[in-house]
Image 1: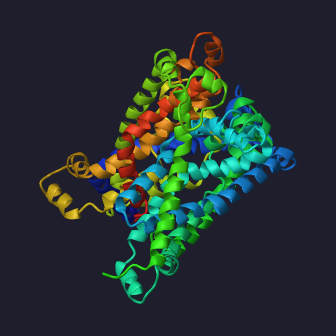
Image 2: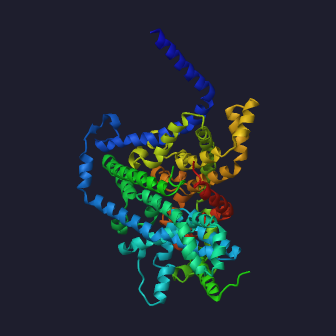
Image 3: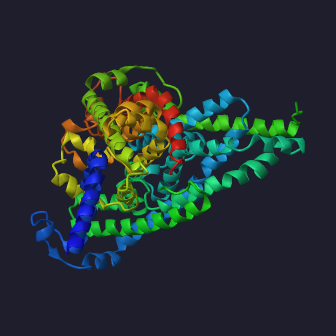
Length: 312
Length: 289
């Protein structure tokens, strides 16, 4: 008995000493911790409405529990497979077509000897990254619209006007082109930095041995760039499901919903505009759980490949 | 000096020409939009504007800048971005500083709490309902609060603080400097580069944000810039009726092009800084610890 109180006293003493020393740290973290609780964790807990027949009037605690009914409905729903397919296709296109572009651009930029010209080109190709998707969407609609540049060129070549933005077959190319235009330039920054970290001695001895510049690019720069490329590639697979609500939302039209609708746009329309709260939360929760598995898996892999890889 | 072979010259020359061409192609959307915004009604109606204004006129710009109702939206975006960036830097540095301390045992657990928000995203509907529940629906502050702390930026700042020399802080501590003073008077003043970089990391998405205002703001008076631009592009704001009036020298197309260009101009003005600090930030992001 007496022993226990002594230990308790000591523990209490430790705690007080800890607080005496560290209390300012707790005060500093408090706003951030509360912020994350309010804006991230409460909405996460709110996902329980996916297992309910949620009604705004009754609230989370008053609504009836329905178990897995919403998820059963989801897996029987044609639209679910449609948005799953669209997400996989658009994500796949991003990985296969969009991802390699900045790598190629960086290898090319690295060949330019004139530093001013190199800087100038970089400056130009990075601009679109800073424009909003609303603006990029506006530019795309104007260029590919009925009287836009694209159709003017087609007409000049004797082809018919195409309503690009209203055609299902055109949505994926538009998605890919707009992704490249907006993000490829900015993507070169990290690769060019990796290239500039390569020991110049390697190039010197290669050129003494008579290696041409094209061989140096293929046999020195590219292989030394592979770890960086691989790390970023793995992180990109990890965020596979985050295709960007704003991009799709600013590029699609009701005529292209069938090929353009992804999880986020679908959940927005069905959940927030039409008020199917519980069902849309089930769709969103499915996406979040699959996303979690992907991020954790591919982050682990990328940490394996490089010491400072991974998101955390 | 090593002699450069003609093969190398050809290789480098081809790549240079290709890149210059690509840079030009990348500029075409902007050039085309600018051209439309400065073209006349007749030229726009006949769809003959490509890469140069046809029958140059300032009418569309004049209309947009004086009667386009974009100044209110512009002001709201400037205001929310300034307030938001300030709050974001404050809350992020306050939280990152203790988390960078090796001798602070709670840091580990709080980091887990932070990182988890990066890997598990709350579904949109409960997120919407929560924010609506705390009164952010149709509220100016929804342009600010949802964006003032991200795990990614916090981790960057934390790894920057970790590199701050311990000796400086120890010396200050011996002189009786408290932890708050340490952060605000010693650590932050020598972190200007990282503050500028993260400030822009927060500011650019806030300036460009569309999803939050679209979800939460119904009141046209509270529309930020991107909402206003989208409304104009979509033919809202009665452009069709406005341009249908006779004797005006603009069309729906030239007016919406002017609006888009007007929204691009502020980005171009601050672009030199954006480029400089985002390049720095891309590097910071890869130094984690």
